[in-house]
Length: 403
Image (tube, rainbow, N blue to C red):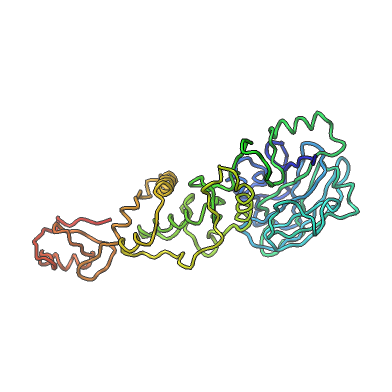
């Protein structure tokens, strides 16, 4: 029976992590081992005054035999970096890997267990694959302390979006410690992000939290990471941006209300997309995944334009239960008084109204005869106090702003 693999930086296994660098606010190095996904997704970012070399030190619960180590970039910082991994059991650190990479992430594999034809199961294909130094076998077969050393960073400050150390127990690890780890991880430990394909339908099954939309808590099909570090589905973000546009506001982060710009903008999370698709593909036999759709790409007509309500209804099918849950989630997020609550019906109705004089669809006012005028046209009509369409008389105080 193959030994279980654990991520020994799982918060349940009580790892300790420190750095010699000053961190930016909300991007402390402790984020990398947080049990809160939203906190963990913010990652570690060193202060702008920091210069390499910078190292991140990890102390593990017990000695382990490292199978592979995953390092991923912080998606808000695109950069080239050179890293060195050092490990030790009790005495001094020894270098076990040294690589430069410019991909989304890198996976360092145990050179005695893996090779270019045999790699860990379900690893992200967009990550660069590297191997531990063969002559350092003693150093990575019994590891209690690990050091990630940023030797050089180009076009950015030292930062890290994800750090995982996968392995099993070293031969020097006491049986009592092994039992403790099994107890901390529960009866069904996760095995290197891979899913048991031959599991029985009655086995305990849980969808990872990082696969779920941070607003709707539904499995994402096209995950995008926001500047705040939260990840939502593209459809959720599209609906939010459309809602903001209906009230004359540009697109913004729904968690912080900060406007998007060329630097602060949503980024498609290709690595997470790949993991979600692999997860759904390998668990397609489970009833919990029934109805969860995988999106392989966007249709040519994906860009939505505002149209008359009758045209859009004939072409678009809406899942009311999903729409309701999404709307309620957005309302909870923007509970601040400076945000205006809305319903989809209100937005739809506003699309069919326009000024009877200049046909402008925005900044409208209604008069008692139920005709609409923009602010400029209303001022000219108020000179005669008669509707230009039906000649019905009205008073200046009768005009009402239409939202």
